[in-house]
Length: 222
Ligand SMILES: C[S@@+](CC[C@H](N)C(=O)[O-])C[C@H]1O[C@@H](n2cnc3c(N)ncnc32)[C@H](O)[C@@H]1O
Image 1 (cartoon, rainbow, N blue to C red):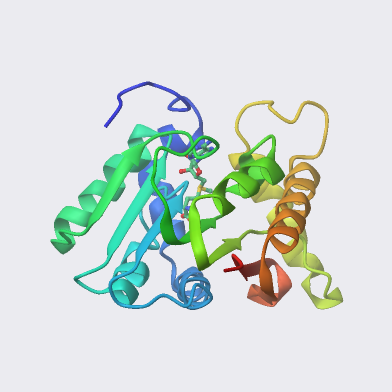
Image 2 (cartoon, rainbow, N blue to C red; image 1 turned 180 degrees about the horizontal axis):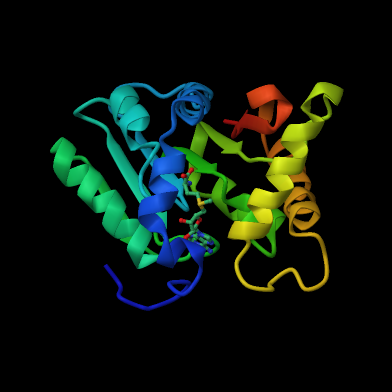
């Protein structure tokens, strides 16, 4: 692993253990399972996860690719990757590994599928990243993205308020300037989603978690 201290001073560097608690809460786990389902993985596949964080998706990915497949997680933050590596070691997965690197110029070879959960909102050029990721997926493979954003459902207004507070708490520094971090995150999500649909076929979209958690996926054409 490259030991650059990039991003380690952010929330994710300081509170990786706390993030992992939230990331593996029961409701969140069901969103992860549904995201992995959207990848249509088969035993033996190689799947790459961009911005894998503490590896909260690994068990679902590993279950679908089996012993003969491969799971590769990429993240910039050493503290997150250390949690991810500890998860791999505890489970004894020999075919799951992590790499320190920038998801916008991924240090990986072509994969059968690619996934990024709660990541595109952090990327300045979210559409460009998705276009790059599509180039990392073999023809016929799927790319799935999961994110959080305000729910369009009227009954979810209190949840939208809580989401705004949460995003403010975890948004790294002042990288959004005077803009609402949640609005900036949603703009990036929309650009990422549009890039995914523009670059794939068989696009699918659903809203999980009372509408707060959009999930999109598409297949790279053969
Ligand atoms: C909200 S966390 C999501 C982690 C994980 N995907 C999950 O679902 O729990 C965002 C993650 O993206 C990582 N990240 C942000 N920008 C990145 C980049 N350019 N390259 C790689 N990882 C990045 C952060 O370090 C953090 O681990």
